[in-house]
Image 1 (spheres, rainbow, N blue to C red):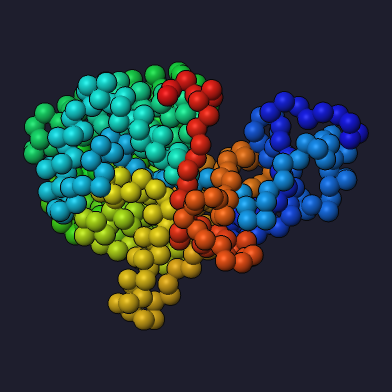
Image 2: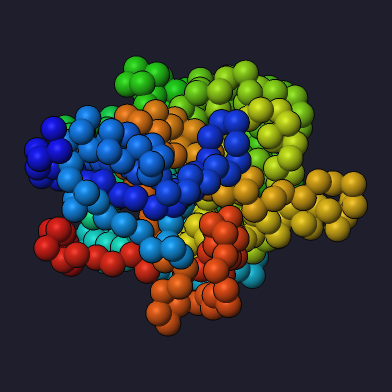
Length: 442
């Protein structure tokens, strides 16, 4: 059986694989053999000593194997569960105001420019390239209220081979930037058109997500319509929740009949097991219980929470309530489009809570690694396809070389894979190399 050639598009790798499982925050598979079938799915993952048997069963030659070096490992691709593609042009600036003022001064004026498709193409091409270069293989994007530009973002993500959920933003309430809002009817019609046209493209990796910006910029009537649209099309939903105290207070004034911010979304059928809500810094235990009950998830965006002085999410408490949790960069409230930055800030945020209360149990790097990979794919309900190295899932992976020439890490001696991963998470950078011939966009 050994002489059969590997089908084209299939691969076998041998070396160290690190990933998370439901039970273990960090599982290290040393000298593992992983086979990828022609469809890009994981066909097997076994120990190196089973080489003989595997090569007969799966029909590959030893010469077909790609061997990783000692200081290399594979890890799952990083999952950005919350990022505003349309805000990338001013990332790294404009961080001098709290959320509600920040939206009016910077965000809405910039987002209103996306009716210009050339501007949109420029920004969206750059953000997809940048996130991929940073190792983000899956991203959950907010676009703007403009249908054509949002469809363009889907096309660009598809052309670059990034797995993405893309949302046309919905807002029929905005007193501050008059021209940056929709009517209820337009919002509804354009959302339906966006979904229909994006699904008709049959992109293998890009799907639409229903996107009410957040409760303060939507009327109850619009929220209700969006809940209906999501339900009828069995779609993902994304929005923001309890990012700042000021915003929570505003929601109470706008929706006096609701018991809590979470209750606003629940009442309008926007809290489902395919919902991801960004931030959640100021959620009560009762609200977290609602998240757990409905299967909705949270996206922890620590850079943004620090940058806009919004609050610090108590991740331990979220995990204690068994709520699905991923990490997000929240560009441009978060100034970095790198998920490695999100990992580092998540560790910082948990240390801040420990400084305030020495009894607080700081998150370990292993736990944050899981939130950035498997946690993110669970938060986006994509964990049947990605998130770790299990047979049948897509081989969605980063090949990390910690000793890369000219890289940011100096290795003094041979280290265990666990140490290599820790060094990479704290010190590493991703430089994903684009192969121009694979891309229709350059």
